[in-house]
Length: 210
Ligand SMILES: [Zn+2]
Image (cartoon, rainbow, N blue to C red; front, top):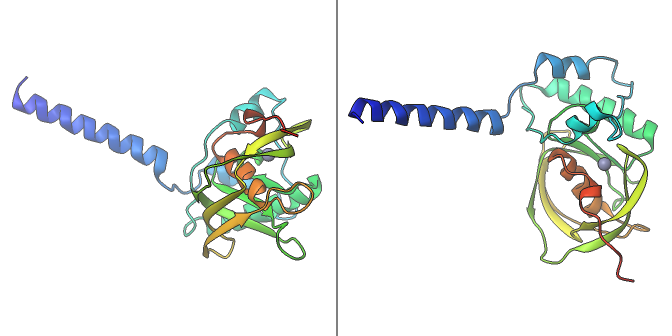
């Protein structure tokens, strides 16, 4: 191999790595297709919820999401959140993630069952940064995208998380609560966060010990 060929291979390798890195990790502005989906109706109109029972929906539900560009897509994100709120209300859910309405982006809504009046809050580009060693088996998990099915799922009793809220403020907090009958906000966050990785609660079923 000559030096120039060697250099050429190195250059190609670096180029491929960069392409892979940018296609996977960068926060790209929304595409025309994504904008069309969000803006297909006014801010008060619910989206159609994708279902695992539909093959084409199922493919979207299994696709990992990427971050949103908070600065350059501000208007689209606000529109998206308003319509997701309307969707969650119409479906009586405690959480909904963007892939459930067909958008493969890291955004979800979750009901703060741990707070007075249980407000709906938004997690944009969320991360789980710390979890305990032991897991619990959470009772009767369910999902708007998996109709008429419920099951117990393996969850962490608490999670330390980072995300941007709908006012673009960076939040770092520890969410605690896995009791189905009381506060299970830690489980809601994990369930919605899983959606962003293409993971459904039926992937992590468990048996109750007692
Ligand atoms: Zn779900």
